[in-house]
Image (cartoon, one colour):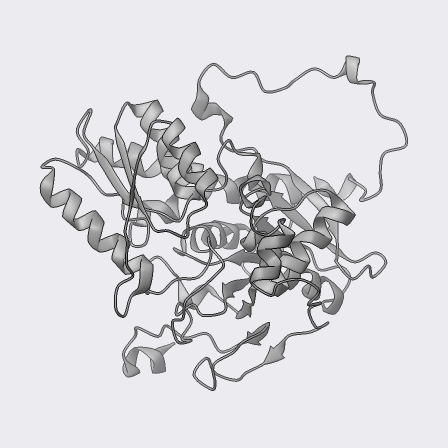
Length: 376
């Protein structure tokens, strides 16, 4: 159990020549999972306070390698996806990597529909992995780029009989794919009191919390969303941050599972990502910055024996030309904007539109009827 592991550096360590790899893989899908957790001091430097970061960037393509493989495997088992058939999906990037991996493992051609916001480096990488990248050229009038991508997916499916769309936003296999991540946390930490997750499709927050609560019934789930996302009842706006947030309402979001939600702005995520980089070396993208900001506040304000696990969905390399590029950040006014030490508070997501780090403990499903809301 992790209780015997100190957050301090071990006094003696074996020489590099004495280290022997414990992971010898014959197949590429065996590289997915068993990612490490790292004790991470909270970002303001409060002595002794911090959280455990689950480093999903140690998967070959990031956290969505897990659902990429799982959704394709389950579709094949059910007969929804025939051998060699085309797979078509909408993605902002990370699931594209997971599906490219699944396409290699299960021998399916992959077409990924994205938008101009995807970084050129990511588009080139996906193409190098053998995926066909299809870019929509204008946003949907009300559903933004996300709905425009989904509409294009529907067109491609209609034109290719037998093609299959995993539909990461609504497919319960996306949720089920995170069972193993939860079991890894149980084995690694022994106890989890608070789980902090970014929310996009709702897959990893719902799937991980559901399994963890079988072991720890009093687990609290904290969702982290982006400013301008409509998932938790804020108005949809154009968003700079990718990988979290949505302009639609994915059915995989388990609203009843959340104890609170935080919205984070791009400049706050950038500052936190860069702070992690310079103080801890381990950092990542927009979701990592937003999650680390919230997890650090929880580490400062919760009782000191609270065990907090925060899921870091990816690493920093994809963001070299955005989050870690000074010219890009200056163009978008993202530099030098230190987050406040605590979030603003609202009593209901519909109280007002937020534009900075804000917290709400009244979590609602904005797509639910009034009667459904009263039954929560």
